Structure formats: structure tokens, C-alpha cells
Length: 462
Image 1 (cartoon, rainbow, N blue to C red):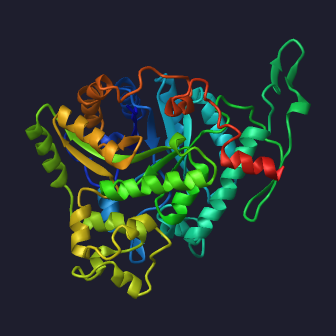
Image 2 (cartoon, helix red, strand yellow):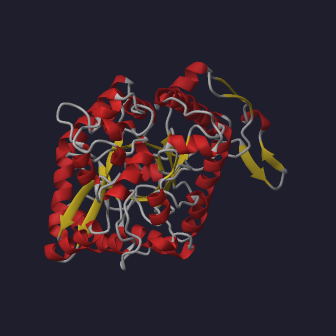
Image 3 (tube, rainbow, N blue to C red):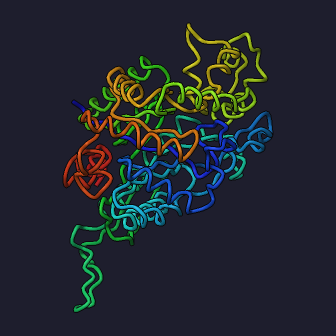
């Protein structure tokens, strides 16, 4: 029986998923600027047996027309955000096994800057860090904030990302030999000069000719996470990611995405079963199904069409409320709209022969936002549904997307995780001290390994 892996999807903001919930009495999300809030959450998550705490992030925000969405500002819908990188060293001091995954875009700085940042975090956490690789989000807003004249085209962003990851990985993996860091007080030798190497990289988008000054960390390369189910995103994930987040829409569509990514990984010479594929999941659980349904109803009552439209515009550049509600999204294509440059997977899911109308999209996304599967019930019902979804989709685990944090995370940890553990769906013990060993379930599996396509490519380049 396959074990399942669990993470918690978070942002350093008042709420996740582009939905509205921070005003609910059970939610402490508005305390997101208080380190004590996150320390409490990290302890709850670690005690429950989650593998990692995942932070989404970025500089974008929802734009409606030519300006920021007023609803996004008023309600804090993907607008209020701080930088979670600085939380990680604090949380690492209050946990011992929990992993931390942070999101960094490949298009806003040089790979050498990111490489030093993540090497530092890997040292400070004792090898418990992961990098969620994104090519950008809300690119129209990001272009404005950074003063770019236009958005970088979708496919070009992925071409840039491939070079970005390869160069960063070469800095982590090739700049220092394993025994080059000496730190010998008696001899005064800090490092062996013949064990530290210049990295030379000449790409179309990024170049480097120099030394990487940060000694190797426990994992060297952070665990590589990636999200994106567009055709280009799937291809990138198959060639680069160790953990892949796919969109949890319907079991059938998710299963198709999972199978396609594994096929693409096999085509690149990778063992497709070594990839960990996960999807988001919002869980309303209580001692009784009636209690869980009540929580779900209270959450749904907070959502509006305006909130849905603000989130969707931020992700795709499309204002649903400006469209004909009785027609499908094909009206945007027919008018030469922005389809294909932002939120591709969140657009393509609503196209095709069975495409819903705009009115139906608003109804479908209300209370869902960018969230994945929704599961509601008593502890046994929730555990049963999780196992059923894993079987139907081929997924290796789920990211729990809290609605009323951290109360619902505590409930999930207290009520559901023990059942899954008893059924053998949660790995017993931790195979190693690093995040990579934990998610791969391989004792001593701390390193990326030469078989990874990124490092195979760099060996050829050398």
C-alpha cells in the first residue's frame, strides 16, 4: 500500500486560495505579521505529522481593467502579502523535522542570488528546505511593479526557467567538492583552493563565470518543487521537479495530468515513480458530518462573485464580470484576449466542447478560488475520501489548504491523520533529517543525485 505525503499550503497573508475567510471567529489569519502565529502553526503541523509547510508568494496582485482590484485591496484577496523567507529561520528553531518550501520566481533576479539564499536556508534549517519554482504569477501586475514595458511571453518564461534552474544547480553541486570545506582551527585552513571550482555558464538568458562562496549545505540543492499543468508547465516539471503540484479539479482531469507528467518524465530517462505528485485539498472536518457541513456553509457564505472575479483576474488577466455571463470563455479568444500568457491551466480547464458559461464558472469557483479538491465530513468519511482520491488520480499526496487557520489544521491533525496512520498511509518515522529523504522515503537520500536531468545536462556541458 502506497504511503501518502502531506503538506500545508500557506501564504504570508491573511488567507489562502484567493478566498475570503480571515474575519471568521475560528480564523487567526489576520495575525500573519506576528511570528508567534507561525510558530504556533508550525508546531501544530509538525506534531500532526505533515511533511512540510509550503509558502506561495509573489509580487503580483489582481488587476481589473487597468488598475488594482478594489475588492482585492478591501478584502485582502491575494493582495496583502509579506516575504515568508525571513520566517523560515525562526520556525526552524521551533521545529525539528518539519520541512519548509518557499516560492521564488525564476525571472526577477540572477540565479547566483537565489543559489546563495537557498544554500543559506538549507544550512539554517539543517537540510529541511525546498524551492517551489515558478515562472511568475499575475504577470501583468509584476510587469508594472518592476517597470517592465510588457510581460515576458509564457513559453519564453519557461525557457528562461530551464536555464535558471540549471545554473543554480551547478552552483550548488559543482562549485565545491565534498571535502573542500575544511574549517581547521589548527592549520587555519578554511577551504582547499583545489576543491573550489569556477562555474562557467553561457546560456541565452543567463551567464556566469565565477566562484560560489557558500559551502555545501546538507542537501546542496533544495528539494525542487514545481506547479503548473499547462503543456509547457508539465514538460518543465517532468524535466526538473522532484515534487509536482497538479491542479485538483476533477479526479479524471487530475489523473490525466498525473499520467502525462509521469510519461514525460519517463521520456526524459527518469523513473516516473520517483516523482511525488500532489494536489491541493480544502478539508472541513468535525466529530460529526453535520458539524463539518456547518463549517463549510459558514465559509461559503463569506464568498461573493466580486471576490471570485478579483482572484480570477489576478491569475489569468480576465475580468469575468466584464464578459457576457451566458457565453463561454471562448468569447475572450474570439476577441483576441490575453489567453495563453497568464494562468494558462486555469483558462484551459474552462475551454473545450463542454466549456461552462461565465455564470457557471463564477458559481463553480465561488469558495474554491485556486483551491483544489474539497472534502467534507466526519473523520472516517474524510480519510475514506482521501484514499479514494489518491486511488482515482494516482497522486502521492495532498497539500491541505486551510480555511480557518490554524483551527482546521489542528482538527485535521487530531481527527484525520491518526486514522490514515493506523491504515498505513502515513510513513512510520522519518528516514532522514533532510526534506529530500523524507519525501523520497530513502534513508541517506539527501542529495539530488547525478541521475537528475539537470545535472546530467550540466555534466554534458562541462
